[in-house]
Image (cartoon, rainbow, N blue to C red):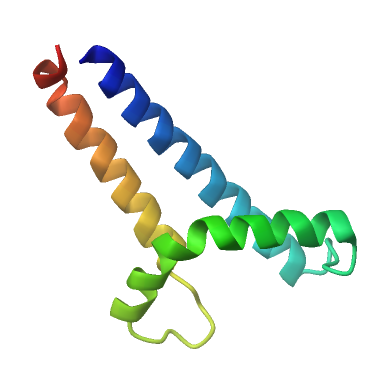
Length: 95
């Protein structure tokens, strides 16, 4: 059961990394440091969008419109941290 705990923690770490990469990349695109006309940049952006939209979509439907400010990544990150805390606090159940 310890391996299940470690796998769940690994998945949460990977999700956290993808969300941070997506947020940083969106800032770089907004400030025109990165250009979506470059195929490699567009491919990474589209991949991150397809991976994270199932997580962001339900959160965006619940949150009120914030006039251009997308808080869905922040809410999902808080959810990931909350899941990590729950898993760590209940780690004894996995042993």
